Length: 147
Image 1 (cartoon, rainbow, N blue to C red):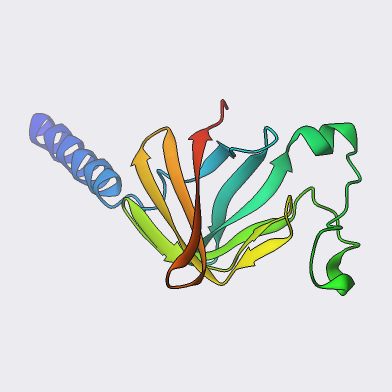
Image 2: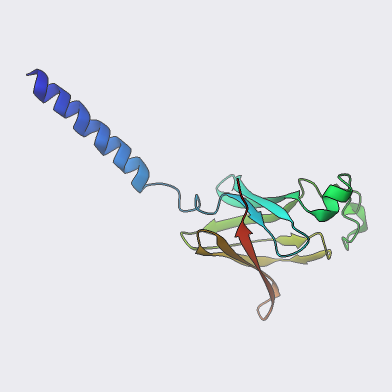
């Protein structure tokens, strides 16, 4: 009787643990820190509600001036906000290899995009595409940053 009870507990645990792994969120491969193409920037992609968002964590300009402001923003009322921690990606959903959403923002240029996509090429390469119209898009390749 004791053997059947132990086997039943083991089978239940395996079923429970196995189902958790099988139902892992499709966005979990995207979560974490990513190095941008420009100025050694680092963006952290994180969950924000039911979507994914990204915020600025680091970059050459921030190391030179941690109090750097969003001075290139076309909206003059936003030029006083800090770049450190600034949300530059919002509302991305989908997966397991492509997410769509927006808006996107580039504090280096002050350019914004209303929509875009995040495409996971492999575990260490992410294509970030921002579009202001159907055929007016810009793409960057980001690489996974060391933890």
